[in-house]
Image 1 (cartoon, protein in one colour):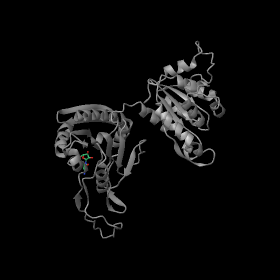
Image 2 (cartoon, helix red, strand yellow):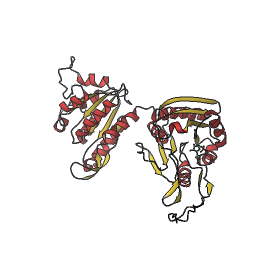
Image 3 (cartoon, helix red, strand yellow):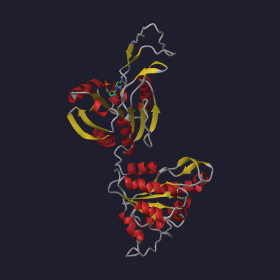
Image 4 (cartoon, helix red, strand yellow):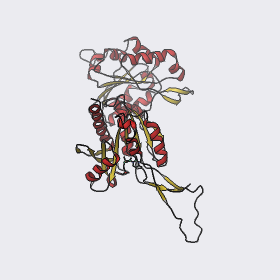
Length: 406
Ligand code: C5P
């Protein structure tokens, strides 16, 4: 319930993407928000207020002359109650209207009347690709941003008109994630966070290899939390079947050596490195170029191993880390004696912060518990879902970065 207690005014202007607003309304409510729908006359051509009322469980507003409001000031009353106004879809015409400060229908009137410093305005444009690319629309988009609105971007692909390009409204789930992210404090604004996540896969031959049970969920949650906190985020992921968090750049790798190369390459721009990956300690000393065949003799192949490079220790020893330009955070997945092992690992890896967790209790799970170990001791973050833990960890790291720069 990521939007518990939030009151969202969902504004619909005219466009075929109105059908997605129905799904969005439902999704917002499922996440705990209350939703008040306001529609323009054009929006009501695409989807009925009856549908939106049934989904939001509240009467829909469409007219500035709505006599249901005792003071007849729907535009004031609606905008004062909102934690955010989200216009989805925002048509080209509606964006132009907002730029001009026009107010000849309830939705534009309400946007103009909103207390600009208290009630955020989020805009999800939806239109034909030519309309979106038109200099007038791009000018309006920039002006809306300059006027303090939050522009949520557009999707690319097939359009209802049959053309293909930019201008589709983002999908309901994408809009919801953007809204959830919007409400998170921007404690990492200006930072570039590099996260390693998932297992590595060390090939024995083209069809076999050594890997481990890391699901990558904790690292992906941390990447999402850092992005929500305003950071630029690069996620270097081993082989996992997880969706990339919105707004995060992902680099897929397979082996520890690939992961090392990608992390070293990205670390130049990073200000924080969070190593959650379960990197294989060893790899086969040779990898056969063809599948090793069972020949019926009963003899088994002899496998030799070499140690993989330690990515975290390497970056923690880099000159940028030494100068305080790269803050390194390690993870330790242990099966027992968490505090002792995590403390020892912090020394060994030479990192300011090491996060311990019990491996068998977290691999593949949606929840976890963390033990934060630094030079002053340890602090536990009790069991919770991984995104909630990731947000708390990000907040903790942000405080350390502020202290470090003081
Ligand atoms: O040595 P161990 O694998 O227990 O250390 C765990 C921490 O070190 C994690 O943060 C992990 O991502 C990182 N690590 C690494 N490269 C390795 C091994 C571990 O970055 N080769």
